[in-house]
Length: 195
Image 1 (cartoon, rainbow, N blue to C red):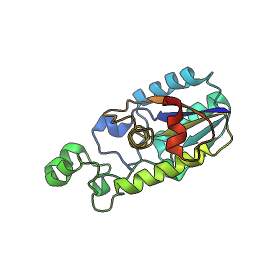
Image 2 (image 1 turned 30 degrees about the vertical axis):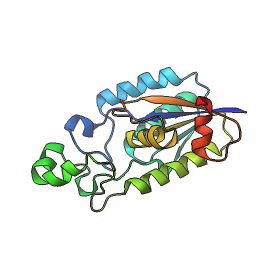
Image 3 (image 1 turned 45 degrees about the vertical axis):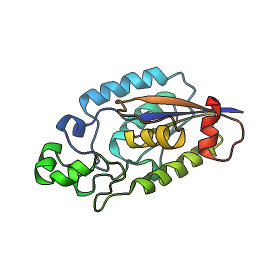
């Protein structure tokens, strides 16, 4: 049996334009982001997507809703697809303001293993993402679109597929993963295509 999962990052957001820390800051798509999503939807219209899963955050939901409308299926919101709360109290703050007020904390954010007070640890985030991807893989759908965030994409590449570091994940970036075989572990299953 061969199945496909298309992992999609949302389009550009108002927070991106304003230079804000994202994470769990629940911003909307910008005008440019809406255009990016329109192009993405046309690009994936014929991909055979039968199910669309989304992060609960507005930017991902807007992206997922446009795709789902185009391919004719509902959006299923999954809490575990949300972005990592990496920034704690800095989430939504303009980056320049945060750097001026909290320089040590902002500098420490360069280390993905650093956990801001009130934020989600990297280890907890990886566990959450891995469990949710396993849940997707365990489904019966031939082709599923998962609309989420850059943090999830990085975990997918670094920790699950073990393909190394993704420095940047562009707006509306997507990757299609082909699943074949009967591996029980999500990492092994997703890596089978490379072996």
